[in-house]
Length: 239
Ligand code: ADP
Ligand code: TMP
Image 1 (cartoon, helix red, strand yellow):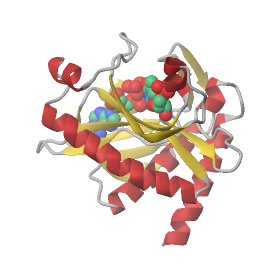
Image 2 (cartoon, protein in one colour; image 1 turned 30 degrees about the horizontal axis):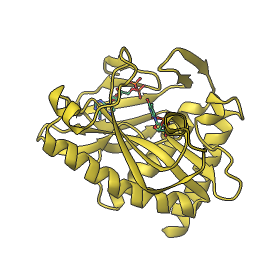
Image 3 (cartoon, protein in one colour; image 1 turned 45 degrees about the vertical axis):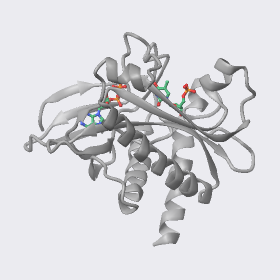
Image 4 (cartoon, rainbow, N blue to C red; image 1 turned 135 degrees about the horizontal axis):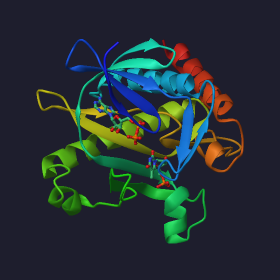
């Protein structure tokens, strides 16, 4: 069964018999305002796990190094244990969310080139913005790690923009996290689900991500299930 090592806003991390592996449990809950609002949604954990598994398997197939080992059950996956880089790497392709409010821009405005923003992962400090020199100065990563993480994030953006477009969705923005394995190599870690990205329907711009919860627009589990069905159809057709 292992020991509960960490209980976060969306997942729990459990130890396993192998010190280099963790069992991740996706929770049936959604939070906003860094956990200040929290609601229960049956089936949400399984849907996020399904989507993240599909995306990680796709990225691995395309040559991206990741922590993912395997899908274990509805809500569980097995991953390689990482020493996490305490940064959130946010890429934006279309104006939305905080970028829209910060710069007074209209949501939906395309960006001439992707915007890359890094935040220090700290609930107490509300995840402050951190540029490269900030990240190095506070010891979150080295210059080399910062550059390598962004190089991987750029590759993921190209691959995932195409994948989601085939599934009838615009990849508006997304957050990635990276970690180091015991041999020091950098891998994409955490998850990729509509909890950590914005997805809009290609034709209608309908929200297909956590904004349905943030803005009270639709049922979050039904929305995530729809994203999974669309992605599954694309990868099945590609096989
Ligand atoms: P949060 O910590 O923001 O509330 P989660 O509920 O998703 O987020 O918790 C998962 C935690 O596990 C995150 O802090 C994430 O950085 C960390 N994590 C993700 N993948 C790994 C991994 N492979 N090894 C160790 N920690 C990981
Ligand atoms: P933002 O517009 O709120 O800054 O969010 C940009 C993207 O990053 C969006 O897809 C949601 C994701 N994100 C997280 O996954 N976790 C976070 O803590 C934040 C602030 C954003």
